[in-house]
Amino acid sequence: MQTLTQAAKKTNAWLWIPTLYFASGLPYHAITSISDIMYKDMGVDNATIALYTGIFLIPWTIKPLWSPFVELMSTRRKWTLYSQLLLVLCFAAVAISVPMESFLLLTIIAFMAGAFVSSTHDIALDGFYILGLSQKEQSFFSGIRNTFYRIATVFGSGFLVMLAGTLGNTCGKTMGWSATFAVTSIIMLALFLYNRKAMPKPENDIDRAPGSIKEVFSNFGDIIKTYFQKPGIFTALLFLLLFRFPEAQLGKIGKLFLMDTANMGGLGLGMEEIGFANGVIGIIGLILGGIIGGICISQNGLKYWLWPMVIAISLPDAVYVYMSMALPDSMGIICSCIFVEQFGYGFGFTAYTLYMIYFAQGKYPTAHFAISTAFMSLGVMLPSMASGYIQQWLGYENFFIWVMACTTVTFAVSALIKIDPGFGKK
Image 1 (tube, rainbow, N blue to C red):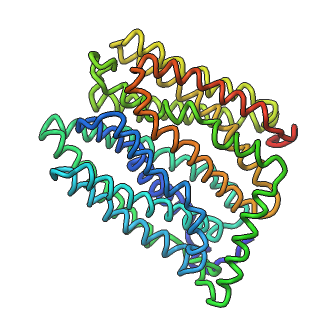
Image 2 (cartoon, rainbow, N blue to C red):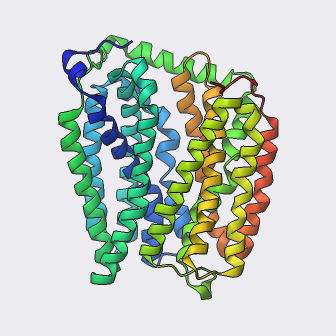
């Protein structure tokens, strides 16, 4: 159990866990997901969108490289708060850049800066979570933090996208998106000001002594060495890199397909419809799938549910093949398809998350889990960057058929891994 100061003991974790993880989820989805929709709405082609917004994932992929500096310098509390303050400036820069002639270059720079700051915020926040709570509280609030991270997703992909559409209809697309990111900046400022008051000051959240720098880097080297010496490392890396190979392409192009006009092979949905379908209905399906997946594994273990979850994350991708062929104009049908695909993804992704926890067991479990998440980001980044070029070459219908063919990769790498039958049970 962690030793806390009187201030930390008196601070109810319900007052700061929700807002901190909302402040973690909102920037990530604004940078990696809402940016796709903005660029498409502003007339940028699919290949350019997929390439540049895929690059935004680089900081989350390589963040283990600078995590020792977060450990070495200042406190986790200060890193967390000042990262939030910098994100205020990054989103303000996006808002200012959108109306400019060179908006594409300027917003890419602002988003990339925000990506580095946001990934650093995540490093500091995860460390602060451990220091600010007892072990019992860490277990209790693990579901709460994930819930508010998801709420940030609904807010960003739903409310902010619908806001951009509403403002765009009133004052034009450019000013609509500029105002939307100005609102995002103001929200981050409000979160910073609130969290500055609400966050506790754990007694053991202190600056590291200069003499410990050599020790930290030595430990960092040992963390890397022991990770790559784990049994089954080769098959584990294949699984981490390729399990999401189809979804990494679908997730990037699916939103653009919903927005493109019928003569381009898309469904021609408006911004408000996109926000509701993806940001509300889709996220509800994702959350329900994740909750049910966690319950199932807790009953029978990860090994028992692996193949049902592989099927669940793969086969529902076929709804996009159907939509690209039928081009339905009913929002009920479109929302149902998106719900099915996202529910399957949420259910199936549970197996991927639990496998990363399983593989991280042993020495340095937290650090090894972080390395696995870096490989996860790399496995999403590379296919998503290429997906726009593939879609433009094949067209939407053949692209979604290609995605279904890629699910064979998910099945293949899942067949390679070994899992203890007892892992994940209650």
